[in-house]
Length: 213
Image 1 (tube, helix red, strand yellow):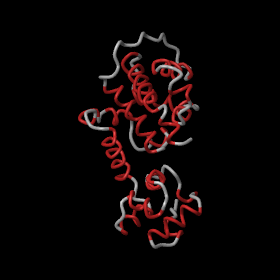
Image 2: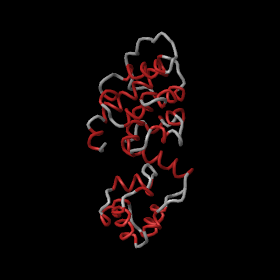
Image 3: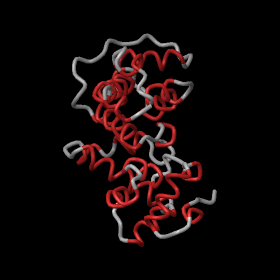
Image 4: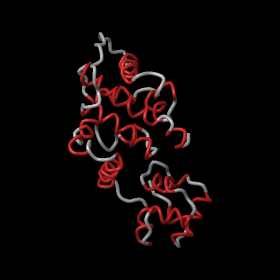
């Protein structure tokens, strides 16, 4: 699905995932990583990430949490939701995670390989007062520390290009370049058109852009 499609539901997705984590942790007394593990089980996280309306705006965040917990086979009497959500670190954690997933195109499952929900929620101070882009930069820095740069990123930096300037020179969209560099998309499966355009812009062979896994 396209970014434009997901953008239509972004505010709903951010609000509902924030509400879901707040309800699971503060009302149901669940560990945030336990709830995330349940969220990742089955297809719910993928459908939510794709922007399927049933999941991002067809139910409230509380209903989403109850669905996730209920489908896990855990039997509990679900408490009434709290009156307010937006001030809790757990709400912020779910809210900003939904933004990061939309912005990068990474799956929730892939994001959780690099950071736990406890660690993410622990960033509430001071990042909750910063813009979403600051959070994106912070998580990307965490990923970069544990995973070496892609060949595309290395060649781009060596050529003195920013991602934006490489996009302008090559004709490959900025978002696509970001996804290749973040490994959200596998450059080895990129179209020949994209590879050729990037190689021309960087003055290298297409093979130089391919990753060895």
